[in-house]
Length: 313
Image (tube, rainbow, N blue to C red):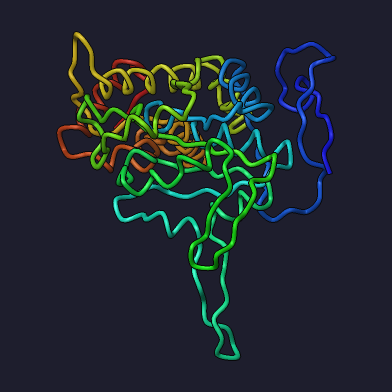
């Protein structure tokens, strides 16, 4: 049922040959995420694997800016360990009972209980991944307090008591760290209960380093000239700086260049290769058309500064 995986070989990172992590034997589990090409960063991976190995009665809360790879880190680590994942998107109308399950009508007219993502993860030893958890009503999340600590899951509708599988893990992601959004960048973020947050260990994931994003671009568009890829990454980081804000700019953009958007831009640029304005045309469709007129102009000005004569609109 379980097997040891070499950290170095499985995740493509520098690690001692003797360093392993326990996962599941491949078994065609439909809840295991699809494995995709992925560049793991050493520090975030270390924290996730340490949590998978031994949560010590904690959940794992991953915070960081939008598009920094919080969700993909967990899913791709689980994919390589053949660990099932139940991903749920947080929102203001999400209720605890949605996570537990519900009765559904069968073909013969009877009612049958169907496990929700929480119950299924607890029962089978999967990861419950609550994305954008800080957009959820904190009162609805209090029902998770006991289960994070390893206590049985009580299903009142069926009077069933589900003992947590030893491999059950609870991971949450959020753009804030549970204390609300102080930056004003994220709509709908709610301050979470201190008692709930106290049940999590925290880790922060920022945008990848340029070398890591370069590795991703090399895999995505291997024929693109190095100088173009370097400047694409430079522009992405300039956009992120303006989005986040700082001493020179205070969140002047409402959109940002995630790694996902960067790779989309590169792919579209390759598709439109040969057009006189391929980079600009692709950037608009990858990101810029989500902004208003002033934001579009600001991003194109940044691009002109970065690319110089290679930038044509």
